Amino acid sequence: MAESISNDNGRAPRDFGETLGAIFSRYPKLFGSLLPVGVLLGLLLAVTETVQLGGLELIEAGELPGPAFYAAVIAGLVGNAYFWAVALLRADGVLAGGGEGSFSRARGMLLPVLGYALVYALLVMLGLVLLALPGIFLAVLLAPGVMLIVLRDSGVFAALKRSAVLVWGSWWFSLGILLTVTLVAVIPVSIAEAFLVDLRASPDPGDWMTVAALNVAAMVLVLPLLASMGYTLLQALEARRHNAMMEREFLREAGSR
Picture 1: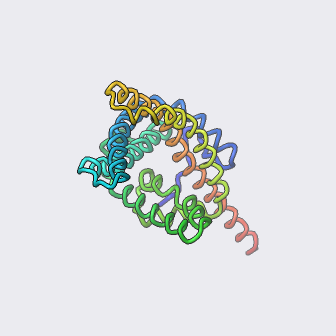
Picture 2 (picture 1 turned 180 degrees about the horizontal axis):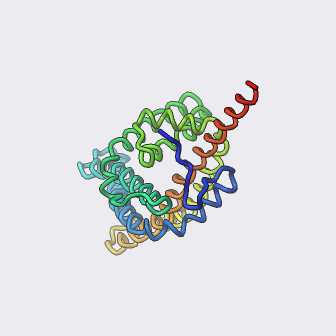
Picture 3 (picture 1 turned 135 degrees about the vertical axis):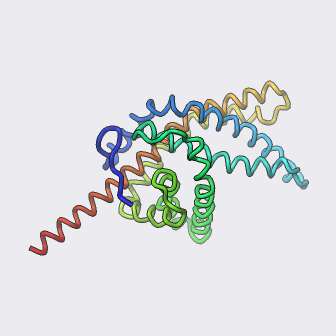
């Protein structure tokens, strides 16, 4: 598959500062488009997390939770995968003129995205169990895989291989982008979480509405940033890989003269 290195500014970013600048400059463009997605994801998290916390309290007390707990766990996993795919597709539509129908298109990608997330989690956990450094290395090396499935129509195992190829020579670059954007995203989530700790334990229905509002606010703010990061990081890695290939080809031709 041909590498795509075009974007809304005409050229994909390549270095660290340029990539971060593109991520944050694209945030306002994505905010309006991802507003309904963030609202839906925030409401889903408010419901599923509330049920899951109740089930965890039963487990800690030595009791088995009811079916609602397991349904909430599954709904949380599936919902997160689905809305993340929708967010990336909408980012593609806004920034590169991709097709419409992101909600319907995301349904066809749900199983590959969930499959990749499962393989990714198993590999990273295995690396962390054996030794912390391999787990961290794999977490960064395979991070773009979901973006490859959604934006480049890769299969699960093709995405694993392609992600490793793209990140291999840009591991520190990728780590820096992931850490910087994650730290920025953590700020609104942490503020919301500070209020949610006490509210989740309250039986007052009015407090649940506040829980939902805080979850929605956090997702509305954070989702466009994470979607911009995923989309832009993939473009930057493809551009860096393309440049490296061109340089090797130039050196090879120069050496053969």
